[in-house]
Amino acid sequence: MSGQLWRKNLINITPYVAGEQPKGDNIIKLNANENAYPPSPKVREILDSYKPEDMRRYPSADAGPLREALAKRAGLSVENVFVSNGSDDVLATAFRAFFNSDKPIVYPDITYSFYPVWCDLLKIPSRTVPVGEDFHISAQSLYGEGNGGVVFANPNAPTSLAQSREFVRDVLEHNKDCIVIVDQTYVDFAEAGIDCLDLINEYDNLLVTHTFSKSRSMAGMRIGEAYGDAELIKYMLAVKDSYNSYPVNRLSIETGVASVQDEQYFQSTLKKVIATREKVSRQLAELGFEVLESQTNFLFVTHPGFKAKDIFEALREKGIYIRYFNKPRIDDHLRITIGTDDEMMQMVEQIKAFIG
Image 1: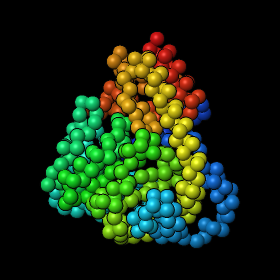
Image 2 (image 1 turned 60 degrees about the vertical axis):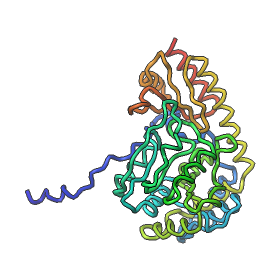
Image 3 (image 1 turned 30 degrees about the horizontal axis):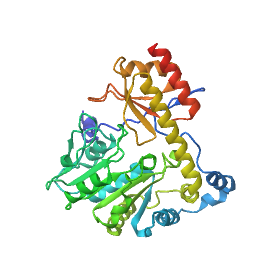
Image 4 (image 1 turned 90 degrees about the horizontal axis):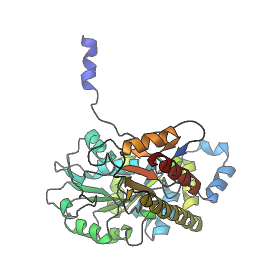
């Protein structure tokens, strides 16, 4: 009996559940919001020239070369940039660094599902505020002198909707006593006027996070970044160095720099994804779907005549994987990653066959 007492000390947590990772040939994977196109050719050049002996040396402890490249592109100082293993690790570091009061942090009830996981894991008090019936977030719902922090994704996931810079400024003006994190994972796919990165020059309590996994086609390299006042970045580096002083490997740093330096390829890939998104949005609307106005590399859709789960399962049987959420308020919606034109054409044809 005494040998089982250790079980009482095990963590009790509901983990984050990622999208299904299907295996096999002839799979069309549209369920993880990965980019449909490869990274910059300059990334391939780094990979082709990489020497095995380069692996002997530790990487830059603070991912210095990549921070410098990102700072230059953004017109900032390197002291305003933090880099780590994907935006999930960036956000987790920020949660550890900034949310240490007994006041709850606030985030929308429909958003990136990792936020409550971190709160549970790190024992951070939190509360959710409901998004509207149209799935937009109300700035007023995020007001509050009692907030210990504010976190929201813009554009939001899984809804694909974006709020304006005025929205972000409004939230900041009503939360001057806590850190506000704006998760801009998908902002590169959004229209002009959504990105709020430059607001870090006005608000020292603003942290803007981003990732290489979506718009830069480098999900496999696990690179994420954050931008903020130098003091915020200093505290994030202190947290990082307290549990893992070398979080980004040499190859990720070097390929990341190569990606950042190829602006022409980056912009051309964005244009292709956006063009396909708009075309497929129209096609699905013509089939009777309600399609939210996406500012991301995915669509959030529902069909009044068919259950989302049935469409999801029908496509899955054909080797086409999209995302279904068995959750309140969104269990009648589907999230569809934008793939290549050919992949999307096959998906649309299978949907046509299903709905008759």
